[in-house]
Length: 118
Image: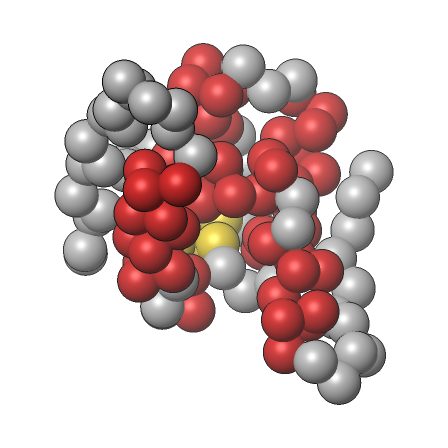
């Protein structure tokens, strides 16, 4: 199971990459910004296996980006924290950069849906 360990690197990009450099972490956060809150929602939207999702959700909680409500028991919601909400501009820029640079001639990126702001 993956766990989150705070980076000791002096570079802020390296520190962010320690957490955000994982493909599943980025996609889980994206779906959380778009309204997913429950474990089964993430499984269905992402096609991620349950063990991988469990470990990534634990990492995001340890890093202070998600809060599990209630902390114990079944049917919990995974709620974005203020720390996670601060990533909204990064995700918007990442989507824009991808649309501008990662699509071939004749391809168009699907519209980036507005991120949840609550």
